[in-house]
Image (cartoon, rainbow, N blue to C red):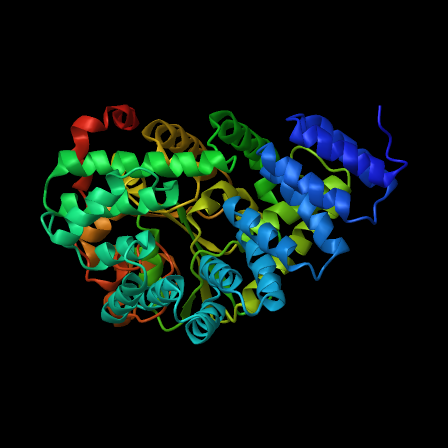
Length: 527
């Protein structure tokens, strides 16, 4: 057995084991070396490489975080750490890591591209614009610089400027799949267009990586759907989702039904009904929060756009602050030896809840979201309704609902790239939707103000009645600007950014029915 008394010998042995395919043994050897030499960077660096080879992203992330604290000026560590955080959906951490990497690597384009994407993902639009300006100034010959500029214009609703930016990217790199997809998203070519034929050939060629395959196949699916050739479109949607699944699997990102069920069970156990009877006092501020929750693609972006068009409302977008506060509370409870059901009557528990709430408000004000009403539109917050009710008892919680098959199909047909892995399988969508239904059924029964339920189909079929109901339910006086929400020029950083720029239309209600014969597994949701 090799000890870590001699760092050089331990490193040499770890290298031998790793190259011999015995990576788990190499990891054990390096962990022992780190215990004996905690200030030495070399074993951390090799251990990160070993964990990457094992496909253990969480372990690699933890190792790189330690390495970054040891060597805070190591640009490559921050760059890799940022990429890992992004792949694992830890968007706030990704933003901070890319910010550090871009400062340490000011003359490299990739960190700035990552920073811009992370800034968009975390709703930091001014920082995203800064990244765009830096990219266009320093790296004008990189197609990715113009692709990102297109994303900014698209978020602002500037269709022509966005198309021009994507065209500039394609002039530099005709194979830029991201530019191709976004061009199609804004300006759909015909299915016989020479460009379409060219993209079909590329999608079918060997050697196309999964990220490019996903973009190309999603673009082709949209083109053939627009041509009402639904069988061909479905085949491309399947290929696109399969490519994303393969890309995520290579990074160790997989949907595990048992994990979703465990999270639901833990949530129900942590927030029993009696815990909701003693929430914190309402905020001693002239601020009221509006949380918009539900499954993605259920109309949450439209609902927020309507609310954000009111002169007293600031639209926060898809904030990840509540998720951060949930993790913070879990960590603090663990440190204090508190487990199981949350007891909101306990003085220690209430103190932790107050800490979590202060953390939320501080982060909200960091984004300059200071208004009478502020929206927080992260659909996944449906898992956190119990926490939100304890922290903000006077908050408005809007639950957006849509026909279950329409919701699932819209997710399957949307290009979210590397995101929540349940999107890309009809079977996983069915399972996740069942978990969502279980949680929402539970939240409806807890003490406190009822959620304001908004149905997508009703909203698009009878918009004035439903929008008036939404505005009144949020505690706002009527404003005619809410009916003209599509004229609002605020940045919209979601997959629905083009839809909310148009007047309400109802053609998407039955879109899924064109594919009904292929969606048998989802029909269980209507039983």
